[in-house]
Length: 294
Image 1 (cartoon, rainbow, N blue to C red):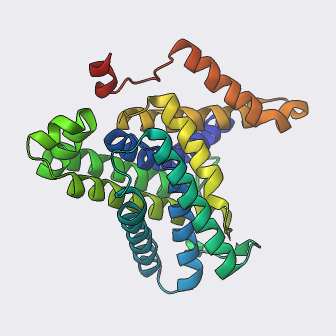
Image 2: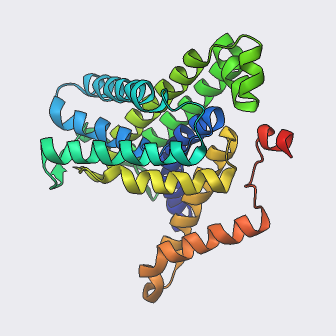
């Protein structure tokens, strides 16, 4: 039972991180139909901000990290994606790869290709005991922060004028524009929120790994994309669910695979995802926009 609870906490922690990353991707895809693979570079930019700021008080680091990630997200939308609005999905996808590689190479030119070690809020690495179970403070913070962000985003989308406009745009963007929804405002807001999620995700990732590198966002965005597809493309609830399911699969395999097969964990994890998609090709939760099109 002790081992099971420990593994459950780890699964919730990893699932929370994947959910944050996947939510940023699903938000942009739902409105623009864009799979933004440059989202990983927003995480990378936020992580390098932590290195550049240094070690003042942790609230200053968080505000700086989130602020820079939001600024880069807005700049990305204005410079790279707004001129291509209305282009084919393939063109938008290529543009996202171009922005991703551009930001990675800029990071290499300015900061070098070698990983850099850093730390944030040393108290996060501490643990506390509940009975015989040892729980890291970082795990509790990750789960709690993700829960707060999910509830806050749900309230924003459901109870504010701009949030309702974003939901309408996600279901039928053309009709929403006909009814008076301002496309520039809605899309810029979506990118700003994705930048906020990326900045917070970067802080939690650096707190976990203690390392920053130009390619650190690539794996994060790959897992986030898989979680988004698993949950259901275009569905925010699906992205969150997919993140937690993917985290549970990874942690379950890591905990219970025989030692001889442990090195094949990723292969088994993606095989499990394929099995789920064979049963549910449209993902665990089908977005309303998909239902409407069908």
